[in-house]
Length: 440
Ligand SMILES: [Fe+2]
Ligand SMILES: [Fe+2]
Image 1: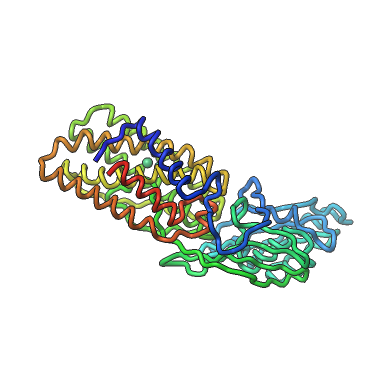
Image 2: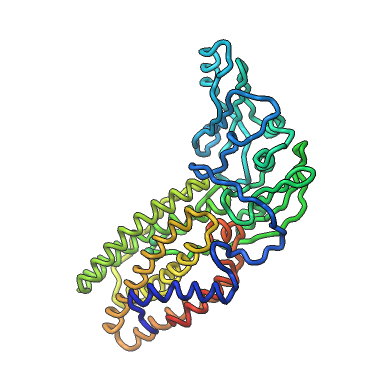
């Protein structure tokens, strides 16, 4: 086992990413490589400042209106969320006050969904105001009838979302293009919500009548293998939920980031108890502060996609001897957290969502420092163990590295590869092998 210093890791991880990308022939934020679906000519749909698609300002309606609003239904147990609005309410009304009061009074009790959804499903009512009339549309059929004929790209995307497909904004291999007799849309749908999560990518044709035909589809599958951060002892398994697989993944990562706060709390306390040098205690404290920030940043990203971040639950566990501390540090720090830093570095280059790329740049830098702390802790703690204990720690680290290389080959949801930049099975295998060679 080589023990890379902080400076060496800072150079090592980006160089593994660059070498893997070169070996795989991928560059920039386009890690997609081969897709069985022809994605040529599709324009990604831009994200609004709020993170979703701004439908209402881009719909082309057959009959002019003064005002449109997508108002969330709050009574279904889902999130209330923000309303989307466009236009000027009651701009051409003869009785302005009555018209404004009518819009204000709308409290939808039921609504339609936009996109696919597992178990955290916001619903909306579409409020349409023209002159004095205020219509409240609560079914997908009614909403669709106000939009057809489909004569703009966002009309097509809206119709597709009303039908239960998701078009992720600002993402690779998602979007819309005009064709001779309507539009084609690249969208996805969750086809299995558990074990493994499975999504399917579709190339859809949307006719001007709003009729949707599935032209092509390709199954994408996923495991839940988020590998970011140091898991504390006693972390209770939980399942993050979200409106789609990207939301659920980000919510789970945010939960793990928050859980890492407990891990560094404990590491600092244990190091102090065993008389570790101040520089290690200080580094653990700084890492704890980093993890609080990471949890907030990833939590915000998760919520933008419609994810619900569960609070991590960590059960109390008894004080541990040096060997247990060394073993946990070897597995969680030297392998998992360091590999997490490597994956984060990859994501900072390849995530289709530029906000994820930006967040991962900072997170990967911090995680690289945390990985260096793990190696520094190993360098301090392991010489204090007996020979047999040292061998057991080395074995635990080797086993975890082997597990990492093995599980890297598992398929990853295509939505996660494109939006969040997770390495697909091929890229993860390349990264894990190079990582194991470098630190094993
Ligand atoms: Fe970390
Ligand atoms: Fe973190």
